[in-house]
Image (cartoon, rainbow, N blue to C red; front, side, top):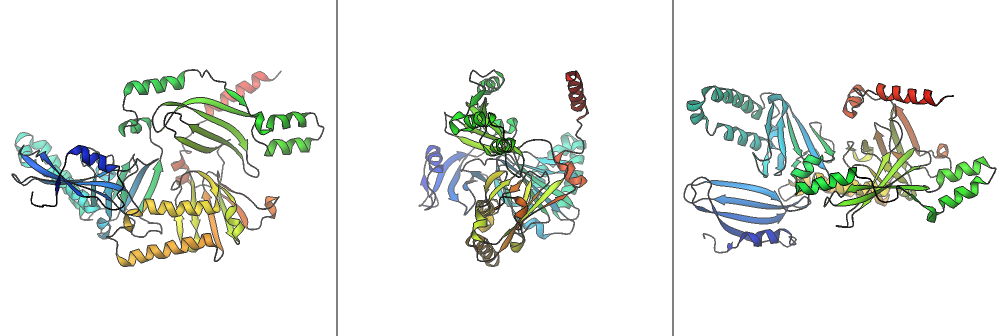
Length: 493
């Protein structure tokens, strides 16, 4: 070996080191491997490292001394994220600086350019650390690699590829506008936002729940027979009791006592604030190990808000736990904007329900998070600010690394200090939840919500684009309405 400090080691040791603590650094591993070009033996070097505030990564570099073949790859050594991510970058003609944005592409990510009807599947380009320009240049080089041989065998195909390459290179030189989409079901990919923590007018980020096909691709369902058993368990009737009386919390006894009373007001108040009388239990599949588990669900009403569905899942096999809060009832006709003026330390303890579609705005920090950034949660004002700080470190964490310019690093430090001041309450500030589906809520501190002057609610009409994104423009409920009306007519004497 050229480097005497390099250590010859087998692949098993490298894999075992992936799960090790990388806080204090890791050595460089060297493995002898075969070259795919000349079939001779070359050298692959592995470096396990931790990108600050981002991910554990495994960087590999191969070099063949016989033919000069070289390549490198980035693989993620950490966990798969709870949800997938999709980055949408709008590139305008003449905007050359946008090509310098750093891009982390995992081995499960797909890159698309809709204007060219072009797609780079996960297997075409493995995990890489590059820029927008580097990814486009690499795609162009790989397409043109065998053009000379292709012109001899299939001239028509070669001519079509040449025409496409001219369009692709025009995009790579910012001669035409296009959209750069990075879609990763594993949630481990990233596109730099140079304006962070402020919103980027050219970049939008969406987080989504993975489909069963994407789960299988990521290895959650490794055995098809296991998937069949899981699917069968969903359709099979449960042997457990469908409804479990929850009398231990006092709701059943309370309802029975009030039923003997003549006071309607007391009855309504108890039904409104008490815990649910019945909890529904049904079989489901664990999202971590795909083993059969059970999910409990009940419907309750939150005062001054609406009816909600609370769901909780537990897995006895792997210990995975998950809880969700879903809105109940019909889709509201209008969106809602909730504004809270935080004036004292007690306001940080207010309960907050943030749905998947709600955006978060803090004007004093020029901070705006689009809907879906943090997902749905039930927390407090203090907990929400803490989640924002952790989310920014995760989503934009790669820009905190050693390669960050000093001016940008100071900007992030200043923003972090201002965000911390919100929790220490050195000055009043404003929290705004903008929810297109009006499924978010901030609790009042007074008995009557009308007496809470720090809390304001504003309803607004959704735009056509907002309804289109939510899938409401093309929704057709005529069949369901007709069936419901016929059922109601039948019941009438």
